[in-house]
Image 1: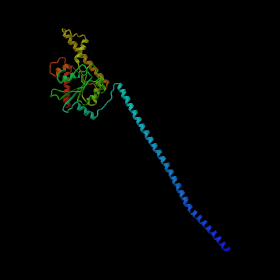
Image 2: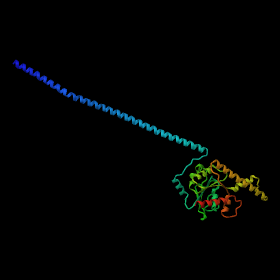
Image 3: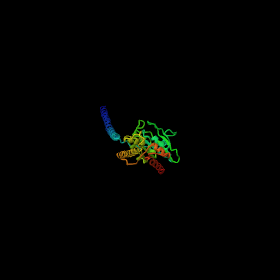
Image 4: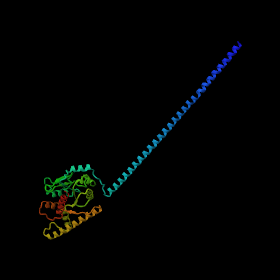
Length: 335
C-alpha cells in the first residue's frame, strides 16, 4: 500500500507538472500572436494619426490657397477701382476744362437712330444743328422754299420750339434731300455735352452747324464728332442782315434818313466787311484752339436764302448761293 500510495503520489505530481508545463507551453505559443496583434493595433493607430496629420496639412494648404486666391482677387479689384478712379478723375478734369467724353454708339444704337429719322439709302439726309434760337427752322424753311407759316414748314419761335427731331422732305422731287430740324442745344431739354449722341447726329449724311451770335463749345463738339464719323460739315452764321444792320447803326447810320443813299451804301459796305472779317476770324480762332482744321464759314440771311431758292430778285446776297450750290454738290457726289 505504501508503495502504491507513493507511486500514486508521484504520478499525481508528475501529472500536475505535465499540466503546468502544458499551460506554460500554450501561453508561450499564444504570446507571439498577442504581440503581433498589439503590434498591428499600434501600427493602425500610427497610420490613423498620420492620416489625421495629412488631412490637417491638406486643410491648411487649402486655407492658404484660398487665402492667396482671395488676396489676389482683392488686389485685382483694388486695381480696377484705382483705374476707374483715375478714369473718373481724368473725365472730371476734362469736363472742367470743357473737354467732353468720347462716346461711340453701338450698332444697335445706330440702327435705332436710323429708324427714328426714317433713314433711306436713296436719299441724302441733312441735319441743321446748333444752339437754341439760332434760326435753324427758318433756314430749313428757306431751303424748302417755304414761308415760316406755310403748311409743312418747320415750327419757328422766339423760344426753343423744336422738342423732337423734325423731318422735312424737300418739296422738289428733283432734289433727293431730306432736312432735319434738330432740337437746340444748350437748353434744359438737351445738355450741350450730350447733344451729338443724344440726337443721333452720327447717322446723317451732312450737318450744318448753325450759329447766330457766337461760336460755342457745342459747335466745337459737333464738329469734332463729325470728324470722327467722317460726316461733311458746313459752318453757317445766320441772321447776317440783322447783324450788319446793327453794325451800321453803331457806325452812325440813321434809318430815318432816307435822303443820303450814298452814305447808306458806304456804311453797308463797311459794316458788311467788318461783319465778315470778324466772323471768319472768330471761327478760325475757335477751331485753332480746339485743334480742328480751319474750314469755310458761310454767312447768310434766311430771307435772302428764301429769295434765292425761289429764284426771286434778292438784294444784298452774301454767301447764300455758294452754300446752296455746295450742299447740292455734296449730295450729288456722295450719292
